[in-house]
Every structure is written in C-alpha cells, then in structure tokens.
Amino acid sequence: MTAAASSERINISEETVEEARNFDVPNDASLAMRHSDGRTTELPSGIQEALLHALQGIAKQGAVSIGQLPAELTSTVAADLLSVSRPTLMKWTAQGRISSYKRGSHTRFHRDEVLDLIRSNAESRREAFESLRQVDEEHEQFIDG
Image (cartoon, rainbow, N blue to C red; front, side):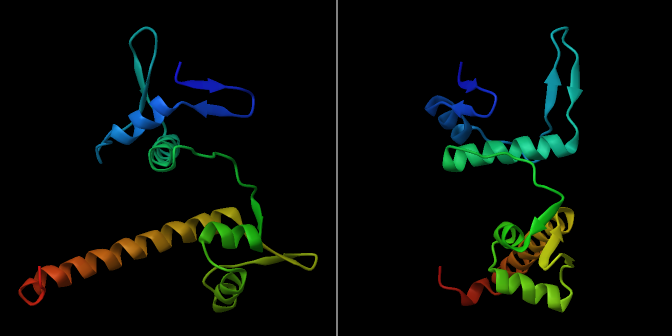
C-alpha cells in the first residue's frame, strides 16, 4: 500500500511521490471512478480539480494539505490565501477590489469572494504572460537567443 490513512492524515510514501512526479496529466484528461462491475462514473468537476491540484502538490512538494475553509475568513487568513500583506488586502478593500464586512470590530471576508479573486488574479497573470509571449514572437528578430 502506497498511502496509509488514519482519521486525520494520509501518509504518502516516497514511491507515490516519485510516481506523481513522473506522471504527466494531459490537459484534456478527466477523472472517473471505476466500479467493481466495470462501470465508470465521471467525478464532478470540483472534485476533479481538487484531486488534480493535490496530485500537483504531491509531485512538487512531496506533500499536500487538504482542508475546508470556513465561509467567513479573517483578514489574516484572506491575505495569506491571496499571497499579499494585510495592508495590501485592506487597500484592495478600500479600492473596491474585494468586499469585506465587520463582525464586531473585526474585518471579515467571504471565502467565495477570496477564492474568486485568486482565480481572477491567476487568469490575469496568464493573460499577461500570453501577451508577453506574443510580443516576444512579434519581435523575435530583436531578441538575442
């Protein structure tokens, strides 16, 4: 057995980590569950995404942590998830980039809005990278190779 499970942890063997590193997941792949009678059931897209991200984490770091985020996040947790400082997060709130609300005297964020912003930021980075690649291709003659 390559992974041992307890009620709180799954320990991943070095062999499994190596398999994850050597496994190439095609972009058009989908994950399915095979039943003992041979039937297959495609997994819902959210589960597929979570499992593929877990596989990537295992391949890159040799470990992965999976947990459920609460619906209400503190500014510290939201900033950590967004990979920004708390002051930057609060600046984004003031600019209307993400909304917040008060719980007593504490600022809180909706989990789904934070996750949406993470996805939006990632998409913006991908688009900027693609634009940069296009500029490189258009001006290849000026770039030393």
